[in-house]
Length: 152
Image (cartoon, rainbow, N blue to C red; front, side, top):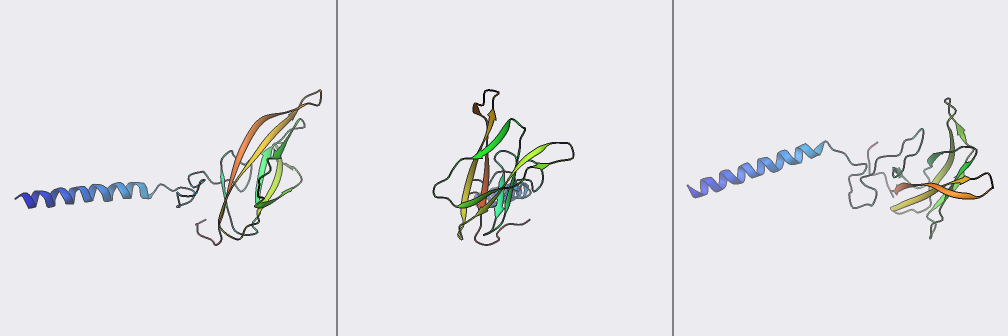
């Protein structure tokens, strides 16, 4: 009788464990590998504004287009990173139909191996006296893969 109860208890615990696993199966992280620093961050939008903390997936040579909102009084600067593991190229500003304007920066990873890159952009505002001050900071993550290991 004791073995029957133990077996029944073990069966019930197994079912609870399996149903718990199935319930979490539908929750998707941006990346299945939670060991990578930005794995739980939302994916960056391919169009429109690049949100703080978002994640781009990238292969060697891919262009990751960062779009940050600007006005005539503001601009964005990318904090330098050592060692440099990417190339940054400023593009012409984008102006959307609703008159929103974005500073566009293309980020191209330079490393052949897997790499986790966190970029920090500071938004500078120029006062009427010409003084600049940081009014916002945004982080953008790039998960560089040596081969395609994610689903799009």
